[in-house]
Image 1 (cartoon, rainbow, N blue to C red):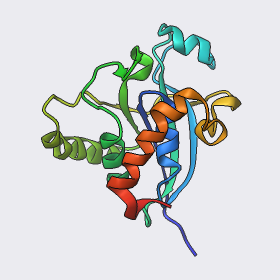
Image 2: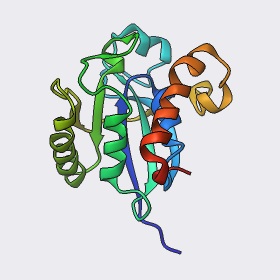
Image 3: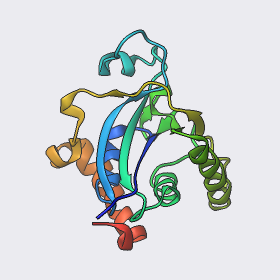
Image 4: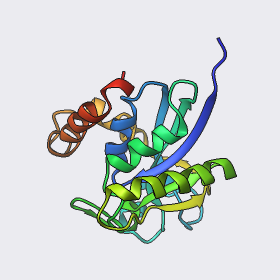
Length: 178
């Protein structure tokens, strides 16, 4: 069976949260936590990213089958499972590394991202501040960041931040989840 495999790169705060969300979505083949959008020479480390000095955002790169889940659906889920109206902040996480961003891989993704943001804006009182930028170099995050929620469900951050986010995801998008 042929698949319509596509890739997108998005950041909505801590990559542990966004990774956990998209690992639940039907049609998502792979989710890799990483960094993009900065200007440090070479591959940045988590410690460098957390300093806020490199300009990188915590992002995830999603490989998905567009015949099962569309790019539009990916973006709607993304924009409604984090707060796209807060600049450089998600909850207690503050800094440019936590900005809301869509790194498009081609002009079609750029156009779709612009349309989806325009459509979703009606659901928010405040202006959506999600950046839409061409994908720069994507760097995989360190191994211990991959599958973080799945490997650390009982950790405090996971229990208090990610588990409730996943409960909301299941209420809103039950038909789109595995």
